[in-house]
Image (cartoon, rainbow, N blue to C red; front, side, top):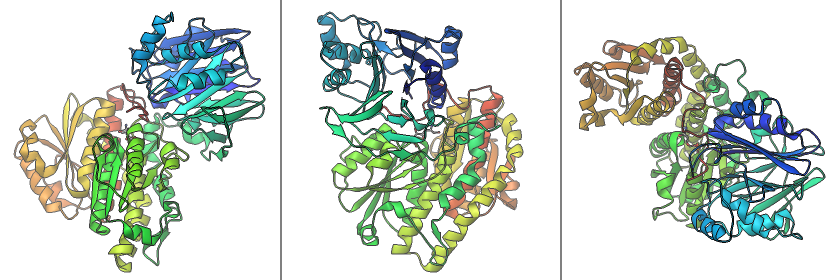
Length: 610
Ligand code: M6R
């Protein structure tokens, strides 16, 4: 989604913000722009397309100046062209605004501003902000006061940064629903929508909360509320390595992140397993055992890939912890009239910790008295800060738009939570130890699966010329079928459906012929014999079967056209291993088709608008 970077200091700002903006390319965008406060003038350059197109246009002639803003736009209001790209300026071209989010009441605001004589150039919702600020920015009014005045008139979500020629050493930034942080340097300050943009320059950051304004100048920064009352904010340290946001010799971030899974799973487990007690230690939950026992229901809420891991969590929590669990799309949950109360534990799962729908679902649950916890990757993200407690999955930065290592680590985190709740409720110490042993083996087993990557790559030929594929699984591997299909469609643009294997008979079976690849996820688990029958049904209709099976499986070997094997583990953790070949398969197919694997069309890494 959109990205913001700003700089005030003593260095040449344009080159710096453009480099920093490249760190946000992974979020997905369709146009880019830059504004530099240069010798009393505001120089603005924008273009449709990538940052490289903006650089080509500038042709090495970067505007000089020590204060700049840069932005990548993911179109919401108005097509992705040069005019609609940010920054947007006021009538006089002396105020520049970049904005992430959506101004919902832009239409009446724009109509009123036009009536008062303002001239609009773009079709965007953002431009109203530039004109509103212009209205309030009288001779004796500082920029931050004008910004606050404007923000009190808008509805919707925003992370904004503003420059003005009248106060050329200043950036004013504000947030409501779209993440922003201030990076603290020595005599220089940064504003960014994502820590990876400033990592190269500083690891000390201040996360803005909703309805806060930051004022940055080379002499310092301050954070205030919309009434300009000062707020003391804690300084956080970003622990990520710079190398973790670089490709490190891999052709794509997605491949790097798939390959990192043994290490990321190890990190998700580190220090959390109590082998003798057959239990998990989860310090961040902020819930006592008594409180955990007081819940009579769990609701898991998430979007996309995180929703798939939530489905696996539902199966685990019901089977091993014997607690009634439901999974809700966050976008549905927030607008229903959900039944949650103080006896409901609502768990939001999110890699980014910024997904607008998941955040709003958690806020709604909180409002209704539920306790909320987050299973989140990005430390310091909004969800992580707003929930009552949580589990960081420690997958490390995930840059590829297609989520991979976050999924496996989410399942591991759900496994840890299930183990802990299970030991409080129904699991014996011996059963708990079995779960601990299985979790401990996962990093090595994931490495084993990855060692077979070249076998998966050979399967690309099965998908040559195909425009449809079916993914089928049962039990814990039904959500893996959904995830495998999502991976394929989002990066290769092949239409793929994930289905519970038996449900296939109720419709999708009509699609099967000898040109249809059907991927079965069929490890030897409680529903193994059932899925063998489903494979037979597909073979009877001459479908081309690719099966992910447990090592040593002779039965499916005799049925499937192609086999990928994974090591044996207990049923709840089979998804951690079975998903890996499906991630690789989608990756190799997309590369073979020449697609932009890390930044697929139309997609954004974190969806911060609803
Ligand atoms: O950051 P989140 O986990 O909240 O993101 C949720 C989805 O937007 C995300 O999983 C999306 O579906 C990915 N592109 C899947 O690969």
